[in-house]
Length: 303
Ligand SMILES: Cc1cc2nc3c(=O)[nH]c(=O)nc-3n(C[C@H](O)[C@H](O)[C@H](O)COP(=O)(O)OP(=O)(O)OC[C@H]3O[C@@H](n4cnc5c(N)ncnc54)[C@H](O)[C@@H]3O)c2cc1C
Image (cartoon, rainbow, N blue to C red; front, side, top):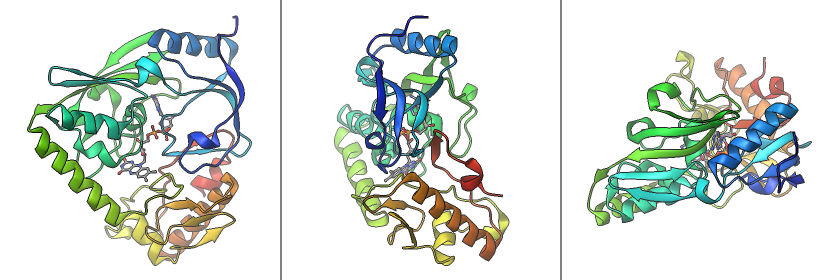
């Protein structure tokens, strides 16, 4: 099959992630329509090429050696936000905080929880993102999923959401999503967003290079209801560093790139954090961050 147009090669990925580490992708494309997305997926199928999708890269760790495959970042119509009555129609590449702000301006309520989640709509669906008790599946009406054979519509029940997880397969890409929202006073929704931004500023470090929560909050009874951040803190990880990576002073479950971290530093730090929590409390922390490229999963997911 002939190679699709406008593919870039050896494209650096570090700057597409919020932690700013990792190497290049062999191929890179910015599809701006569902047709183009399907065309690219079909090409990778025929050629046996791996596929990666990057949204805002806010929950992503890319291998230092990069990714031997095609990385796509959605653009144009696949990153747009439009109102349709009480619905907000978003491209999978639309930024969630922008969608929340747009809903507020339009006097639509239900997407407020997205204001502090620095990802895209597609990334939020894939990760079942959540904050402050908001629930993606409560307002998500449908998603349009692209595969190598075309697009299909799925409703939340089809997506098998669980904590920070959906049933989307690796070569399935969220092209569009519709949120069914309630009418509200724009000023009230805007005030809610402002309050949420303030709460977040007080609770989490800002202006650092990080992918947010590193580990999921465990449901192991030995955690006694403590969050991953509290367990890491109590295991002495707050401020702990490896190379250019360290657990944040303000929030022990955030790994920070202090300047010149490599993904290898982040992984070694994560492994040390997991080891300490396991030894101290018997709890196995499970990473929330997603991996792209050849990363030794055993190091991250551990024994
Ligand atoms: C400071 C900070 C605060 C955060 N706070 C929260 C929070 O409160 N709640 C929360 O849930 N998360 C939070 N996160 C994590 C992150 O923002 C979310 O997981 C977000 O949903 C990831 O979206 P993204 O577009 O950045 O995805 P990426 O990091 O780019 O990718 C994550 C995964 O989603 C896949 N993906 C991306 N786009 C698509 C698509 N269109 N179709 C299919 N798969 C796709 C990727 O392939 C990858 O597997 C935070 C992160 C940071 C840095």
